[in-house]
Length: 128
View 1 (tube, rainbow, N blue to C red):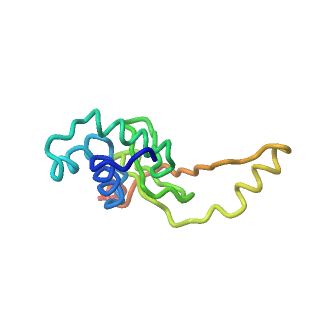
View 2 (tube, rainbow, N blue to C red; view 1 turned 135 degrees about the vertical axis):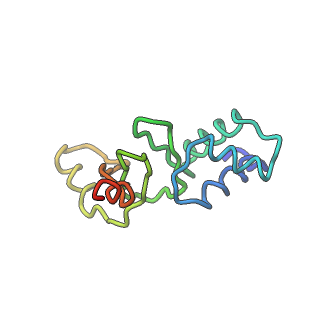
């Protein structure tokens, strides 16, 4: 990374402190508690830089872009009702190798596996 400014450090720390996969507006509100003068534009530029540098992942599931500080390959579950995004502790064993074998000569650089459905809270709300 070019330089770890106080603003970049604060954005990264806030992102690492949550597992909720927040959007930029939420991150901005949290960072403002530490750095009251930080602008939303700075947060967006910082998030773009963190993604480019491999320190965060941008997740696009139809609504606002969400961010994840967990850059290790892992699947997600997205609730189609409340839009919550959850990390799943599943190892998609063999998927990368299977994809490479399916297209000889290709080099798989990343993979993303996402499940869509209802989270426990939303599913329970429909059951009652």
